[in-house]
Amino acid sequence: MNYQESLAYLDSLSVFGVRLGLARIKRLLELLGNPQDRYRTIHVTGTNGKGSVSAMMARVLSQSSIHTGLYISPHLVSYTERMQVDGQPASEPAFAEAMTVVRVFIEQMMAEGAECPTQFEALTAAAFYYFAQKHVEYAVIEVGLGGLLDSTNVITPEVSMITNVTLEHAQLCGGTLAGVAHHKAGIIKDGVPVVTAAEGSTLDIIRAAAAAHNADIFVEREDFSVEGGDISPHGQQFFFSSMLVGVSRDPYELHLLGAHQVENAGLVIMAAYLLHNVDSRIDGRALREALRLVEWPGRFEVLEVPAVGAAGDQIVVVDGAHNPAGMATLRRGLDDYFPASSRVLLLGILHDKAVDEMLKILVRPEDFVVVTPPQSDRAEALPVLAAKARTYAARVESCADNQKALARALQLAGGTRLLVTAGSLYLIGGLRQLLLGKEKTQGKEARHGQKAS
Image 1 (cartoon, helix red, strand yellow):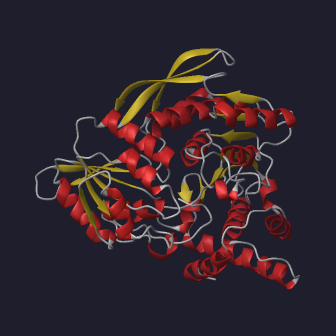
Image 2 (tube, helix red, strand yellow; image 1 turned 135 degrees about the vertical axis):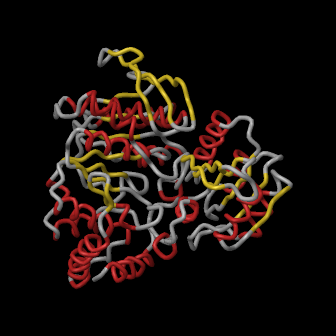
Image 3 (cartoon, helix red, strand yellow; image 1 turned 90 degrees about the horizontal axis):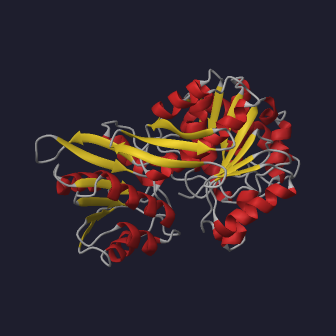
């Protein structure tokens, strides 16, 4: 298959939807020769922040001169972003080659009478195969959904990382917050250390799972802590402390913005200390440089583009917040970094999200709001989204075309108001491309995938 044919094949697998379980992926990987066992791994889950933590962790490894793979989901623009080596997405031919190999064994499974793997399982197998073909030494693997029954949960990592636990995808993970925590804790393996920022009852569940697996657990705010310092739209300073490793208010610079990214960086630093015990290449110099340079597009990302109808630049915040916790983090960041700015919000949300709660958290009465649909079959209907937005702000417009919606939002902002686009990764990827002046938009590539965003 070429690249476009591989996308069409993935699209055909999307009809199977989300079907949690490990039997299909284990058989598929067995037929591929279990490529996931040919390199070391770090496994990352959590409700919010797992993508940022994965990106930071991968940058730390690469900065340590370690040949590193990174598997993430979903993507912003292209499926090739989901499997990266040393910070570079797979080429389209390499992606297609991996999918072609995986397809051969999927068809063998079906000929054997086995159930067809899902789209996300095929992508996971392709990534594991690709990393083995590239001879990576480590791969950072982000969970797609939950953890316990997620198709990535076939690895035995060096460190398991659980960012936090809030009530999302509960219908697939037991129906309660405790059920979600149980699924997140499902990535914990025998004797493998766990680093987490979970709190309260969810931490109790994770702690119990770690004890059951005889796994050491390192908890943010207990075993290590972070403290924010100076901030600017270009980066921030923070301090890391841990009596366990003998440091107090150790200063770091972080390229990523937001107090939540400081918390995420704390997890990465603690994990790096643990990894140093098994690989001395992961040292303080590489850690500091990695955090100073790391990039993670679409996560409280500040862009400057030409203003519409005014001289100078327009400041735009692009953020993938797609649930109440993410919206709360975004709102906190906006209030911290741009407290005096009036705002234009360009929003698109999926219908299976807590739409009212998300809008209530983010939207202020004085804001201008433009709603437009994410590139997903699950997009909330525009009349419904607009009506809900009018509950919180009087000035609400809707536009079905993303490009025209962006043009209108830029016009309303006019270089004097802050423009914020958020609500779904299936929206902001294409908008970000347009803002950067790139012709390629999300289109077909962003319409499917197991992980709901």
